Image (tube, rainbow, N blue to C red; front, side, top):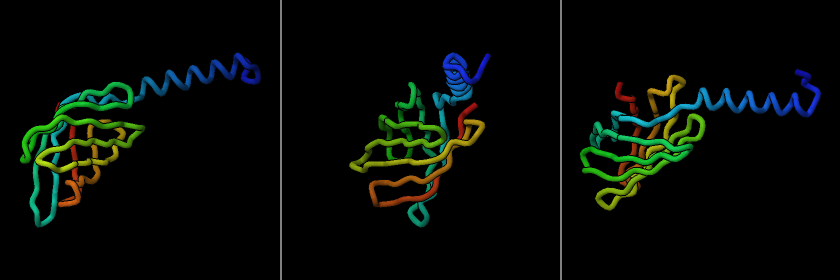
Amino acid sequence: MKIGTKKGFASCGVIVLLATAVFASDLSGTWNAKVSLGWKGSGTPTFVLKQSGEKLTGTYSGTLGQSNVNGTVKGDDVVLEFEISGLKVRYTGKLDKQADKIEGNVDYGGRASGPFTATRKK
């Protein structure tokens, strides 16, 4: 394959896209989280997620009850959002290279915030 030709560049582009698709992570599954809110307490919520492209949907189950979740995954950036008990909750984190752990921060509608770690249930 000649790299200097249009066909060569197109072939390289296809190879890069295929390699990206092979290594892209699918976050679908059950995730167990640990949340620390300092003096306001801690929790161990569970997320059941389904991924379609960059879009995430699913459910949250935890101390506050249950709620539907929407979110995104772009590269290793993960965002999960839902509303529960009148609070808009937002988890933002980074996915590790093995795609089995997310670490970041959670904000409970400005009332509480703190770090979280979520691990994929095997």
